[in-house]
Length: 299
Image 1: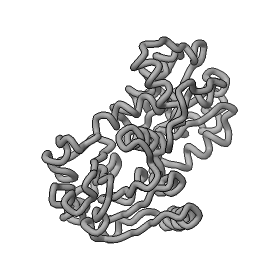
Image 2: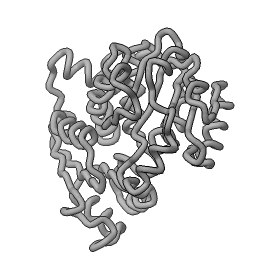
Image 3: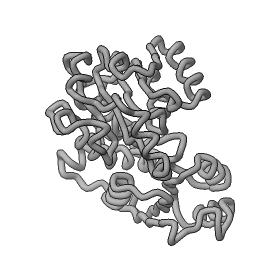
Image 4: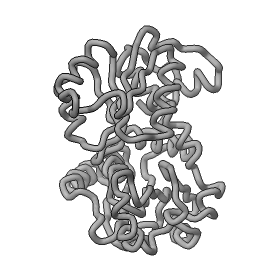
């Protein structure tokens, strides 16, 4: 999919080609949680490829409330070619995937955010020329973004250093799997409560919001727990000399200061744009037999 993302970006953005690969296809977009990048990237990307995206909020579709998840999955399967669902609960996605006869794409759940990680990796691939051997330094919450990185970094040969406050560590079952992947792929995985320890020698400093949608009531407690976790130039001083910075947005100043966020080392805006090319690749890979024309990058 990363190869396909690079191919679509080159052919459409650089060469100006029109590729109606999804002509006649339709996509159901279920959004229990709002999002700038997920909505824009999916809606514009699917349309750019000739398909018809249909945006469904909680006002349009009452997932599992007025209609069961099973019934919703079956109805959507009869009218659309795929569904992207951005939901609160991973279990809802699991039921949709089980009951639908069409592909269900995770647009975000409480457990994972895989389409964001594709964009992150495409951005790093473009910047560094290869992913293998990079050290990723995560400084922040043990959340869905981190879980998706933990599930994938080792498979690309990347090392992962994680710092979370006590009580905000990643899910233990995911940590166990990540340790297994690191062992299988001969990569390093470390977990600590010290942000500088996680940043030491890291090529890529990564953080995310400390307060996700649905956690507003925890704001005061979380802000207190995350004291000392802001990414600053002090953090970057212990990182590798070629360090870069990623944040999936939206960003709050307490997570990363302006000096880092707007610095030439920050890749946050190319990262945001790459949400579009990567979700396009996901849809093309699921719904067509298209093969990339671009030479395969070295990962």
